[in-house]
Image (spheres, rainbow, N blue to C red):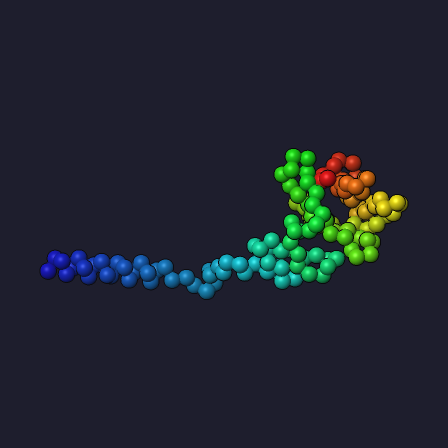
Amino acid sequence: MTRMITKNTFYCCLIFVFSSCKASKENLLIVGADNDKNGCKASAGYQWSELKKECIRSFELPLQLYNEDKTFGAGVLFAKDSSRAEVFCKEGRFILKTKEKFNFKYLFRNGDYFLKKIDSNWIFINVNKEMIYN
């Protein structure tokens, strides 16, 4: 008899535990359902590119710049006609427009930020000429 009560108590507790774990639809979190307004999935590393008009992974772009201690990177994308550059970094996403073009040396500017080519190296600097990425 005691064994039957213990068994019944166990099953009642089990039913109670599983029925209280039922999630409501309002609280249901679907992993990977983080598309932004352009349909880019941030959890997979995608973000919207204004120049390409599609979702890209900035860390897969051919031109990668890094800060001095190599802890942060910036991906750079150029328009087909080289009139604009798009920089993706921790400070944000910037569209820069060509200001000068001399002997394949480019200077792109957007307000307080510059993307400049010196010899064969690109640098991303702010208006105070503090190097952010190179």
